[in-house]
Image 1 (cartoon, rainbow, N blue to C red):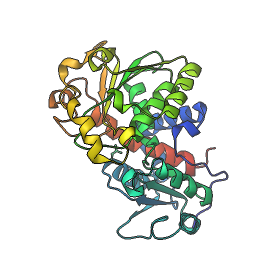
Image 2 (cartoon, rainbow, N blue to C red; image 1 turned 90 degrees about the horizontal axis):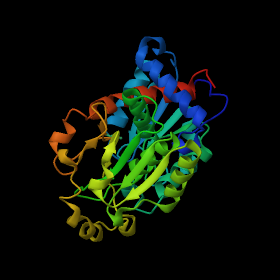
Image 3 (cartoon, rainbow, N blue to C red; image 1 turned 60 degrees about the vertical axis):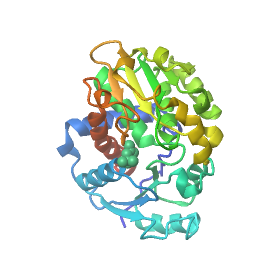
Length: 334
Ligand code: CP
């Protein structure tokens, strides 16, 4: 095993990191994207444990490729082929043992894998962090998806320049099943942190957690941004610089898919995102989605494939942000 970094730092929510440290990650991301060869094999001999309780295309593959290009050895574990902490072996034992082998541990843990006990996935990740000597990287839990959030703010900066003062609409959309709140929580927290004028648009039953809203309000006060909450989809979209679409489940029916469906059905047409809803400030304005997306259910093809859509650039940027994070956590820099 290689030497551990001097001071362990976990990446469980962007909110746990200072604005200065997030800016540093974004600066490294930019440099890695522009000069990939400068970073090749800079982390040779390091190792990364990847735990997936749930499926993934982007998070798993961007991280494996990032690790390979940096010289890190990644090991993929799924619940099918490993005793993963809390279901078969305690979190404490799993974390203590694995952190003797690995330099970092990434974990994906969705609500379905914790029986939809609210916030239990995030609690388990923080328990891993308590017992692991190696940094814990959140590959998306039931509360946060910080690698996605980092990518999202990087992509906004890349396309539009300084985020401060730009209007972002974070919009709920219809989906055929209730999805986690991790992505909306995370884009809300990071965009308010970076001084954006945030409009959170959703049907009234689809409000986010009051604690998250309160943190976002505090972020906005500190960063010079603003937060508006609206239940009117058409009004919300006016004069947007960024439209960020995501579906999520109603917290009032959390874990009860049958009950939730009754809430959702009436919104099927009005909250499917159509081209005519987009009311952008100019040609540079962007449509974002973290992917995967259900085409013509969440948003029309014309929106996803339209000239404002940056969904593939956004997905590509996952590679550079995870590289920057690994470099920051495991490299020589503080
Ligand atoms: N956006 C995202 O995290 O995608 P995956 O679920 O494919 O990893």
